[in-house]
Amino acid sequence: MAQRESTFVNMVVVLFLISAIAATALAFVYQATKDPIQKSKFEKKKQAIKNVVNDFDNNPIEEMFKIPVEGGDSVECYPAKKDGKIVGYAVKTFSKKGFSGLITVMVGFDPDGHIHKTAVLEHHETPGLGDKMQRNKSNFSKQFDNMDVPDIPDKDNDGIIIEVKKDNGTVDAITAATITSRAFCDAAERAYNAFKKIKK
Amino acid sequence: MNKLKIFTKGFFSENAVFVMLLGLCPTLGTTTSAINGLGMGLATTFVLVMSNIVVSLVKKQIPDKVRIPAFIVIIASFVTIVELTMQAYVPDLYDVLGLFIPLIVVNCLILGRAEAFASKNNIIDSVLDGFGMGLGFSMALTMLGAVREILGSGSVFNIKIYEGDGALVFVLAPGAFIVLGYLIALVNRLQKRKSI
Image 1 (tube, rainbow over the protein chains, first blue to last red):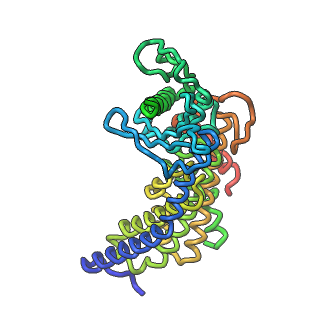
Image 2 (cartoon, rainbow over the protein chains, first blue to last red):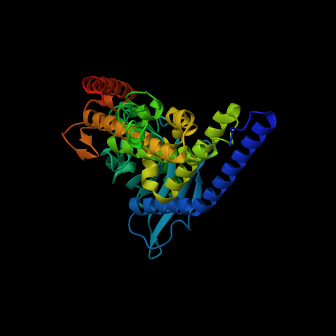
Image 3 (spheres, chains in turn purple, yellow):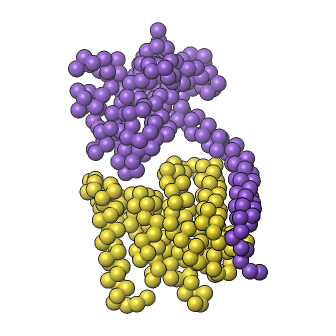
């Protein structure tokens, strides 16, 4: 068969057919992968909550409530209970101060305001630099484990407690990723402010 | 050209990265570690083989003047399929490579092979070409990633080789250019000595 000629009708018909077939194929793949994708995101969230707070026996995702924070946004809060008693809160917080895009972090609090643990949910920081804030890649995020937030002095009196050392805070920044470190602190601070509102 | 030659030319004499310098955006962007390079290379290989198959099947039906948009639609569809599938079934790999997958669409290597090879050859040759070019690309990306990881983070495939952080510049973009330049020089030297 010879090459189809480049007449106007031919071009329109062929491009239309190719796009239509591609769109149909993609629709099927989307349908097929929709549930697994949601499930894996849900699993990730569940795992993150489990990692950042004490042992619990309720379903924090069902008891989720939202807390408004400054700037018209809100953070999601997952209460963890054991035998009906609160053993901690997992706060899904975020920061817009990252190097590229939004950073979402799960921060777990003990009832007295200690940070229990943290887990990064989503970020778009530079691979090899900013992504060191992930727990498995460096010790940076371990500084936040058991951080006694209410007892940290606010050295420069700017109302922000969790800060990197460059900003008169107490957190060691990641080498060459100060912006990411600041954003992580910003997210933790936002979580703590939300936590204070729960306690009130 | 015999079948073996079609397959092996992607590794040495027409290697996409070291000789043709195609697809440099993902090459430089993703190779911060050996495993990232390998993952990106294999994802590209899959898209390359699939798009070569489809392009070689429909090559007679596509009018010459609209071939490029037609190829792009085909390639972009396969990239989206890879992205969705990865996200659904290997979320861990997706966490690492997710940012780079959409870049495969604009990888000149794939469009280049569709245009230069698959649209002129039969399906078996096109599959061989896709595998050869794709695996050659993966090999180059893995080498580049391994060198950058050793120099920049002191490890390779996440296995620690020496203590300390290494030279940060190799993890950043300038390091990618420096390492790529030296690797190209090395490959050229080897090729000149013995024509492969």
